[in-house]
Structure formats: structure tokens, C-alpha cells
Length: 440
Image (cartoon, rainbow, N blue to C red; front, top):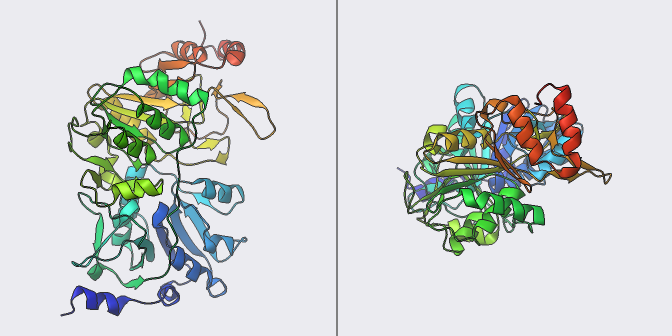
């Protein structure tokens, strides 16, 4: 019987040899974020002229994706994303990426029950002495995808942090078909952006609603990260982490002594997440840290799991809200921006939590590429994808205040939302509400 290191050597091949298993018409999976398999993707791109109609799934890939960029007519490779990064959004704009609608906790069940995976490939940490590779920053969905694949190819990346978990954070060499090695540069970094005066005001508006000992979820995007960074400068203490994405805001909370996880009512002492990306300092912090647990999003994002945390506070951002309380967080008209992710799960779970609150934040206006300013509170939507239905609207926050839509009628919602719109747009929104017969 081979020991694990002999088995490893028997499965070690070059990237070019590994991708020979891909056939025309196959479904190939890249999993997510910084576990994107750069060497295998480049080797597969080299086979472009030999292949047709290879469908690839990934998400939050930061680029470049060689299989996409080598084939602008999509004759050989068709890329699809579960949740778009800024890079993937540009691919969507060029017609080079298709979004797959989902709620993040459902991704692995989709694979388990409905989807085909001919070949799965991703970056992992080096194998340990027991024969296990850690799925690192992608553990929230990776194991479920690998389990469904006909062929599993792992690309070893020494730069990845080894993140401890409750379950499904590792894969054993016996479950792997091929292993590849090669040089990797530093992991992509995503530092927190500098807060605007509007960001600071939004954070100040939310702060009074958060109690000591609250468990915090911060969504994907700059606004929740900035809010988290500003929470680190507050007087709050003993905060907890239960989140889909662990970004730098949590590291800032930890450094400030605010993040202890001691008061969590579920998994106390552990900051729980499903995916991780941010700065080099963040990767160092989560590496083999017993205070951080990475677990499958099928569990982490389930509303009943979230609701176990008393005083659960969910903070997400959005693109626009209409006067009925519908929220769009993933498209601008028909232009795709990001994805549903876990926003609806956390809004639901936080609302179910004893003492919980769910906030969706946005600046009151934005300026387009032509320099024209627009209100983010609009009379109604025309083609925009609805992320949160009006029936689940809770706190909406702009720099002009926070309003709670729960249980409010259409005229009350219109009145509340207009009160936090930019003053320059309140009169036109009021006139629109009258025409829509939702104004008293």
C-alpha cells in the first residue's frame, strides 16, 4: 500500500499533462476567488485549437482568465460566473461571461442534485503529513464541487493560508486524480478603500443600533468593509463574526480589540466564514488561526444557522431601492454588476435572530460616466434585477438616515424612503409617488 507521499508523487504531473483530460463539450469548474487555478487555466488555454464548447464555471475570479481572453468569439471556451468580481463584470460587459443566478447557500446543492462536473481544478495549500490539502479561501463551496467531479486536479499554491474549519475544509490525496506544482506570485490583495464623508455618515447612523456582544456580517463590496473599519474605531466591544466573506474589516476589528467572539450564542470563540480574500495581513491572520473557522456556505448562510446568533447584525450594500422597498444589489438596469450572493440569506437570518437587525446601505446618489448625478432611490425599477423583494425589506440606510420598512404600507414606505433621499430629489420622488397612488 502506498503511503501518502508516494501516492502524491504518483499523481504529480505538469499542468499541460493534467489538462489533457478535458474534452470538447466538457463542464470544467474553477471554484472561487484566490483559489483560481492560474497554471491550469493557462495550460487549458494553450489547447484552444483542439477543443470546442468547453463550459467553465467560476466566481469572484480576479483575472486574467486565459481561457476567456484567448477566445473572444467564445468558440472554444464559454465562461460562467456564480458571482462577479469587478474583472468578471467587465467580461460580462464584453459578452464574455454569463451570470448563473443563485443564492450562495444553494450552490453546492445545485451541483449535488442538478449539475455535471467533468473536471474540477483549483489551487490548494501543500499537502500535510496526513495526506490532506486545505481548501483555504474557497472552502465555503469547494468540497461540494470536487465531490461531484469526475476528475479532480489540484494545483498547489504555497502562498495560500491554511484555514481551520469545522468540516469540508480539506480533501485527501486518495480523492484526487492529478496534482500540479509550479511558481505562483503573491495572492491578489484587496485593501479597504478610503471612506468618503457619506460612508462615514452611514457608519455613524448604524452604530447606535449595534450593541456590545453583537455578531456582525459584512457583505461583499467597499461599503460594508468601510463600515466595518469605522466600527473598529467605535466604543463597541466583544463583537462576533459570522459571515459569508471574511475581509479586512474583520482583521481591523480584531486589531482594535473589538472582535473577540466571546458573546456569540452559537460557536462562541470562533469567527465563522465561508470565503476569504483581502490583504496580505488578512491572509496571515487567518492562517492556522484557531479563532477562525471556515465552513461550507450551505451551512454558514442558512437562515436557521444565522438566526442562532442573538443580536445578529447584517450590513450589506445595494445599488438602488424603489419607493415600494424593492432592493437591487446586482444589476444597473440590464447591466450585470455582481450577484445575489448571501445578501437575502443574511437579511432573513438577522431578522429571525433575537435582537437581530438587517441593514442595506447606499449613498443617496451616484454620478455616471458622463458626470450626471442620479438618485439611488427611484420611483420604480425597469429591468433592474430585484435582490430583496419588498416583502422582506428592513433597514435602508443612506447618509441622510436609516428607516425600517418592516410592516409598513406602500404609502409609509414611500414617505420613509423619500425622507432619506438626497434633498434635491425628494420633490420629484414625491410627485412620482402621487402618480403611483402610494402617497397620502
